[in-house]
Length: 286
Image (cartoon, rainbow, N blue to C red; front, side):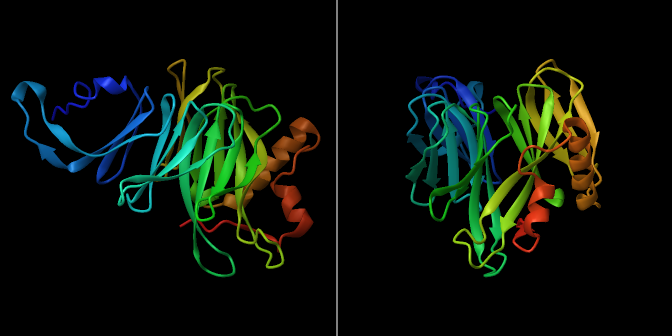
């Protein structure tokens, strides 16, 4: 089926990013505009133009190109990131922008919502993980509309993509060099701490790629237990992952890092456990 998305929206510039859900397709444009199409309703159109999807929402809250999009909460919310360093949250039910998150200093490269359960209260928590070309990864509390923390790794340059591997409770971050950074996804479990229940990212180790080219996209095939890494030089690297032994994998990564560096030098997963395993738990990802 041929779908026309460009001619009528030419005034928005060229397409810079896409995000699809079960019901909607969000398209980001170079002008800073976001257009949301309804994938379940098709409008009749002349045969030579193909079939067009109905436009549900149009937002223009970015000053420059839209660089990242992500749906959340069963298609009721959409979040966008732009080259203007801003992150905007939209309510698709009310068809309006709710609020803006600021803190990055360069173009947003990736956004991913993360739903966790509070370790003691058992309540549902909405989080957002953002990465940018400033070399930083931030965790946001969407309910309180604030930044919970910023992480990175000393030698990490522009973050081009990241991937959450739920079965391992880790985040893999790709940069412009030939290393993948591994962060454990943890959760503070301390009733006396004001940040009790907050999600934290803690640097564990690096995985070296064969290609020196920057990573374009990361993917994880859970059935095939494979990590897929697409590089800018058109190579595809495949890493086999044993999701049955997550703790063993993290411990092995920490050991490898110690062998290479003599010491972690950063506040890593092993150090967090040594300081108090009762206060830091694996995040319960919904």
